[in-house]
Amino acid sequence: MIVITGATGHLGNVLVRKLVNMNKKVRALIIPGEDIVSLEGLEVEKVDGDVCVPDSLRKAFEGAEIVYHCAGIISILPGQQKQLYQVNVLGTRNVVNMCLETKVKRLVYTSSIHALSEPAPGIVIDESREFNPENVLGEYSKSKTLGTLEVIKGIEKGLDAVILCPSGIIGPHDYRVSEMGKLIVDFVKGKVKAYVDGAYDFVDVRDVAEGLILACEKGKKGECYILSGQQISVRQLLKFLEEISGVKVPSFKILHQVARAAGFFNVLYCNLMKIKPLFTPFSIDVLASNSLVSCQKAQDELGYSPRSIYESIKETVQWFKQKGIV
Image 1 (cartoon, helix red, strand yellow):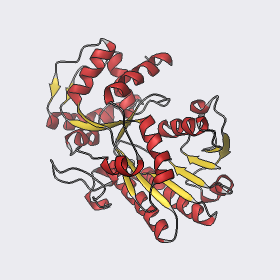
Image 2 (cartoon, one colour; image 1 turned 30 degrees about the horizontal axis):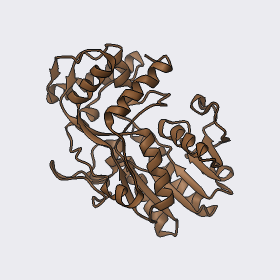
Image 3 (spheres, rainbow, N blue to C red; image 1 turned 180 degrees about the vertical axis):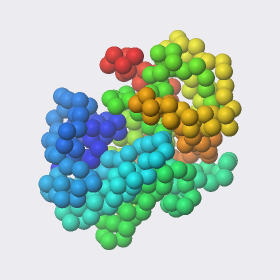
């Protein structure tokens, strides 16, 4: 039996699909009252539970050989420290402890590229970077670093676990419309009127799910593997969207300093209007940060092979259109 936390999320539901297609028995941990539309039609056992409630995990984890811990909060918003810590850190601690208690054979943990300490510009980010919460960008990154350290503590206690650090995830089956999904949707709807210069490494959600499975099968106990895709500038990303959708790239480029300052007011406005902001100071800082990432270790040791980012963007737009989101 395979258990997946965060099974209804973007990565989680794609992982469920892959495992079900492999004829694996899958048990999805579902927060009571959670929207499960992303799992409709899939042969998966659903068990109520919450990583923040330790005792609720026992029923789901008992009898499981493998646990994929994908549950977590991804946030570009300020003021989310408490919630990030509760889910990404304490929630991961609860998962690790329950894996030890129920004698799960292997834990596959989804961390983040942001959990690794960022080197100076021009230096490649690889698995040699340390997990240091004092040397990462923003509260989200810090929470993922601390969560990863909880897994490492579990490994020191005898837990067989592998750690995966994906870069920016995009792709189809994005039912809740992620941060990048919102950018794609807004662009195709003609709502993006300006852009900020910068770059980032994006990876297809299906490749990350495949990477998790490969790590479960081939990964070495205690090892970390980066699952990245392709570094791409914001301008090039929008040019790809223009080619795919026919919507023109905006000609107005906002300077980083101006965009960052505007981000504070954008967050306030979106909070008042109760809508998700397209950009925040954190997201602007990320675009200006070092995004030179290597997945060579995963390629060599796991057989990981990410697809082109153009293909991923194209199929994401097609999926959003099929679902009537654009």
